[in-house]
Amino acid sequence: MESIAKLKWHCRRGTKELDSLLENYLVTSYNQVANEEQALFRELLELQDTQLIWFLLGDQLPDTEGLAKLVKKIRNNSDL
Image (cartoon, rainbow, N blue to C red; front, side):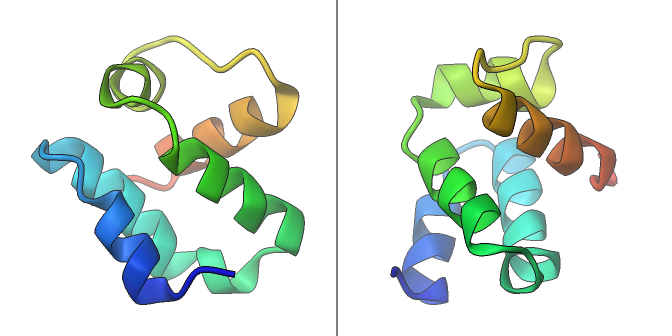
């Protein structure tokens, strides 16, 4: 399993909004959720920045149910 520091590094995407959304989830939720959701978050971090923008800042959702649910959770817990 990756360390929080390494995950935080992967959350840095070069856009303030994406960085904020991803780091907020990492700090506030990651350690409190089940291993399955942690794995989904790590999978989300593997996506290209353009996909993350569509999913987290746009109105599109990933095709897989687990990722779609996680994206909705991250959106709903943001202060953007």
